[in-house]
Length: 140
Figure 1 (cartoon, rainbow, N blue to C red):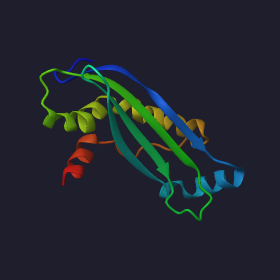
Figure 2 (cartoon, rainbow, N blue to C red):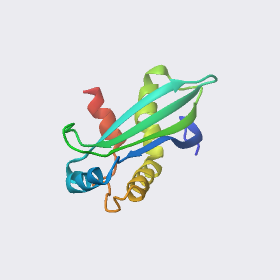
Figure 3 (cartoon, one colour):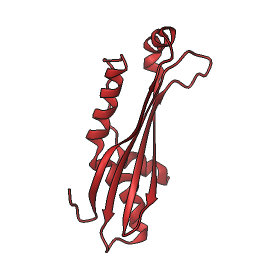
């Protein structure tokens, strides 16, 4: 995909983890899955030649550490080449918003596939991940 601002060179799952240590945890997770929360974090690594690796981390977990709980995590990596004309001030929006939005359906599918394969076939994201909204919240 070539937009006017960046070109995706590669996109892939860098790390995927589904941890349910025993059957008690699996049952507990199933009973409490509605209370699990999705946390999203985005980090970028500058590569040479105007290239950036954007790592989008999704963690799906229960906050209560006393509970027997499963842990699910995906790090989705996107390598992009940034257009020469892009100013530094516009880079943050590209990294935190535009790049993640361009791969959001891949990320969501990876997440639901992982949950399905982990024995939680009914887990769907209640609403689409909105990286624009997350970006604007981060600014305020």
